[in-house]
Amino acid sequence: MKILHITTAFARNEKDFITPWLTETLKRLKEENIDCEVFTSSYLGLKNQRIFNIPVYRFRYFFKNYERLTHEENVPDRLKKSFFYKILLIFYLFFGLLNLIILLRKKSYDIIHIHWPLPHFFFAYLSHFFAPKKPRLISSFYGVEFKFLKSRLIKKILEFIIKKSDKVTAISNYTAQEIKKYYEREIKIIPFSAAVKTFLDREENRKTDQKTILFVGRLVKRKGVNYLILALKEVLKEIKVKLIIIGDGSERKNLENLTKELELQEYVEFKGFISDKELAYYYQNCDLFVLPAIIDERGDTEGLGVVLLEAMVYKKPVIASAVGGILDIVKDYENGILVPEKEPKILAKKILEVIRDEKLAKRLGENGYRFVKENFSWEKIINDLKILYKETLKINPS
Image (cartoon, rainbow, N blue to C red):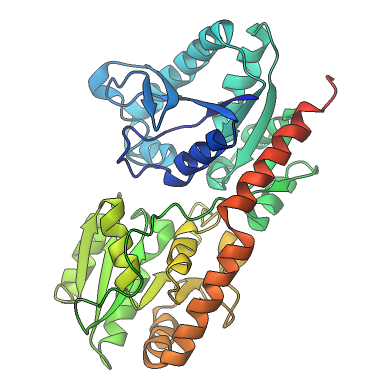
């Protein structure tokens, strides 16, 4: 079985932090003798590569120094910054389609698995007419697609994608329900699992006695990190804690300014992007993980919240906003705690509750670990994908 995965961005080297769950998925599929290759965009002139022995075909779409539409941040966020990126998108679409046609004329695939189908479905749908062997099409939705749904035309396009795909998957029940608003059909829910590597011994002694709160993720509005910083201000009125923020993004400067305004520089550390080993260390040694996600002004929110799974792998208690796909992971006071979005005082109250109650923290952490093993293990997810691929190949040609 040979599968081509189409994605906006893919790891540029074996240490790259971009979509680590997708990289891990493909590595594990290859271990199951499923031949996986990747078709994605270039970045600053980057050419074809092999990442973890996975062939990665990159299409060039503009002059080297301007190929920044992808990888550094979400394309919808990029398009808002300058009219130039809207022009660049036209080149991206044209050369993406052209290069995929060329690839499918040279190589044969059983299935094209399309991640983030808007607009990548049309690369596959149009180019597969030129392929000597017509591959099946699977579209996987992650939630970001719904940022675009402001016009009747885009909604019709999304309906077409859902209807014409041989199979459709979603990463959460929330995303599946969003899909069904535009076309009613069977949706396979296949999430991704934690990609964090457990480098360290679980019994390693903590380097400091100070309590630590951890956040990991891209620093964009829908992550709601500003509400976590506001909550920290309230927490510090009663106990001393440290907030570690790992990740980068368009909101970082605003968050750093907010930290200064609230005079919290002593208690907040911005780490940016770090290595897998460093990330494992911070998961290992935090006391609490918080994902204060929100529904932003465009209606965008967490499609799943994979960082919650990563924290649970380390048996850490988690607190998260009750929005989007987070509800597929966190069960209130069973394996974590849910809070309303954009309510820093309530968030602060729950943080204090978990930090002060060691028995509660331990119970949530243990339950979270079991929940991940039972529902989000790599073994289950890879098995679900294998079943999906076999079912897709059994579909009769229309």
